[in-house]
Length: 79
Image (cartoon, rainbow, N blue to C red; front, side, top):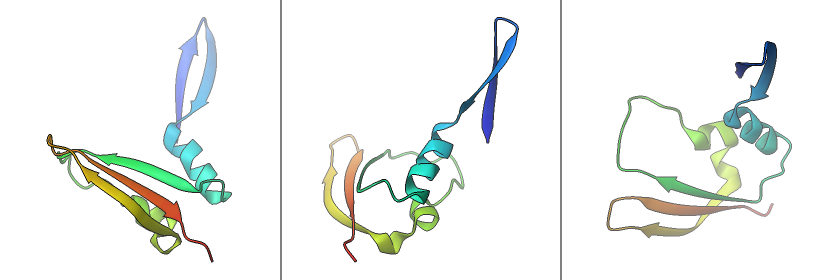
């Protein structure tokens, strides 16, 4: 999915961050993930772990903040 913006009469295209992240995972360039989750729900969404292969990642640390936000640090499993 690309987002198109018009600048000074010329069309430019920049890659969405999800496309960039997907490429990093596809080419095995990520060793660690730090995720923050918020205590809100917007509907269905998507499963990050299903799309990147949950069997490749191990939860290294977890912290829950008083406001309900959680911080999860995953590291790539050594195979």
